[in-house]
Image 1: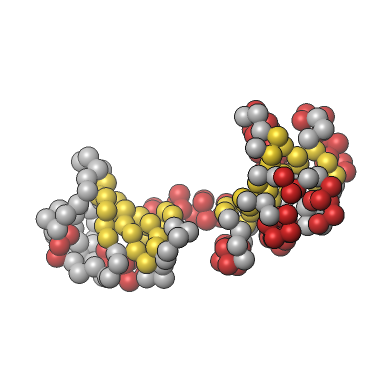
Image 2: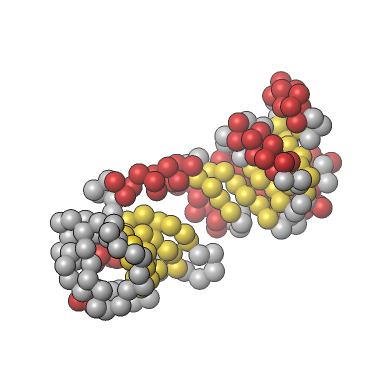
Length: 220
């Protein structure tokens, strides 16, 4: 694949190095000439000084034949613009943007960026299960339809502990599809499945109804 990377910071540099090791054709665009020189000492001529937000620059590096553009600068606005130009002017089939501020993610998705990666959300997802105020962790938002896959941990104080799953009335278009316990094998649940403290439930629900599902599965 021919992959263009916008941003020669630490993320862009290591990403380029790993993709080169997988034999992809890589071009890394970086605005700072000092950073370009530093990267070129290791990666060679795959780095070029330029601004991926400028259509002229993208034209010069052959973006029209690129399979993917990945924007990983430290500026959300620059990453959005680079992906927008690549997708709408050069018809790049896959665009990936780094997002620092989680509040910006819906805008990126609304404007058609194919994939977004938010390091803040990734870190939060790893620690939320240990925070009493956050028993619900988003796992995956399906791009087609209006569904999300989420994970809920059953707290020791939950009213669900010791009760059958069928006792709880779920909201429409929601489903508990997997129960993972500390001392038992993962299982596909049914109405007779008895929930225990610290069970982790993998669920599917409609986007925007997470709080309702949190209230039911937390036994509030």
